[in-house]
Structure formats: structure tokens, C-alpha cells
Length: 129
Image (spheres, rainbow, N blue to C red):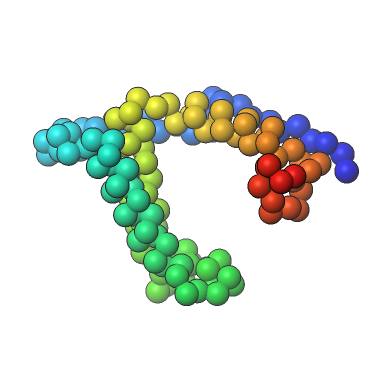
């Protein structure tokens, strides 16, 4: 199998500055900064991921593929994905983490850990390849 090199361009992966600013303003207007500690935001994020997971619980693999288009679950899945995103972006902002840089570095690390010629079609973790 031919080895392919990943094309990772940090300037174009993720830009959440506008959302981060909007969330900071939203929190400030409500005097919620006092509650937005990293611990509290991480716990809230975990709760929202749990709510997202609930939508998928007990579904078949096939049914899980259509949650965003099924009228019984589409609104809920969009709402929970939005909640996860909001808390993630707010947490990164409070911690001073540049999500674009973090994502770029993680993709580069994963490209090294999971080279195409070894990882293609495999579910194995990098230390088992």
C-alpha cells in the first residue's frame, strides 16, 4: 500500500473566535463568570455529552446513522451537539486554549501515531499497530 501524507493546514481547521466572544458576552451579561470555572465547565460538558449519548442508547448501528434526519431525534441531536460545542468552546476560552492550534497539533500527532500504511482499515490503538 502506498503511504499518503496528511495535509494539515492550521489556518483553516477551526475558528471559534466569534463564538468564544459571544459566549463570553452572554456569560458576562448574566454575571455567570463566577460559575464558569474550568471544573464547572468540564462537568457541564460531560453532562451534555451524556445527554447526547442518551439519544443513541439502544439504537441499532443502522438507526444511529439517521438520528439527525429522523423527525423523532433530529431536534434533540442538534440541540445536544450545540450544547457540547458551546461548553467546549467556553472551556477552551476560559483556559486560554487556542482550539485551532490544539486541533492542528492533535491531528499531526495522530497522523504520526496512525500512519496510513499501518492503520488503514484497522481499529487497533496506535500502540498495537
